[in-house]
Length: 231
Image (tube, rainbow, N blue to C red; front, side, top):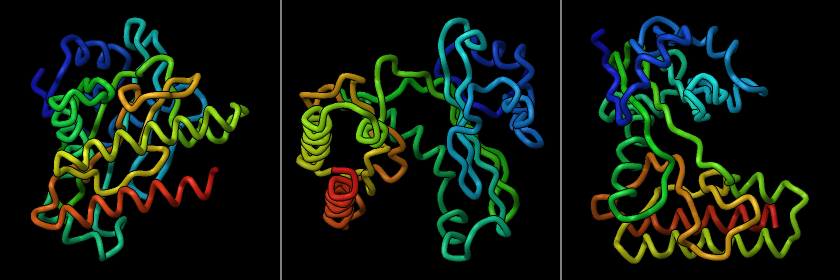
């Protein structure tokens, strides 16, 4: 079956179609969202924004592997005017997120394994996009760690590890263009080294076309804001 999705791992197209997610695989209609609601682990969706949803599918859907499915259905009426130019001239944030993951992985930076991704439509018409990733077992996002009952020393050590990982990226002349605690995974027991940090949702990753210093400054500012907020 022809599909507009790009598959980075074999067998998933067939597995997801067999689970009743054919519209998701084919980027059709509502991207199988009613079926995703039936299959997804609670709470469903995990996150919900104006145009995006995130679902976590149980291991039985993926042959023993838990997966995350991020959807985007965006139209001019669903987005504020300040975002129209970006959506008209750049790929979907989900596509940029997938490409960023591949580029970060090439730098030996940990990222969730990409399973598949793709987009259909062109803004200001309706844009539909999908990003499917595999779970990184034994991890928790840094924001969730701070909201847990873990000792404060563990939380702060994990925050230090994340900041060190981001600063190491900056030394390469690169930036994330935004770095919130929810955008990083650390071991569930806490991180003690930047090598343990997993980068998420890096759609703004790059050099910044001459303005990279602004993107790097934004990364550090947001990390400090979250430290003050959660610490």
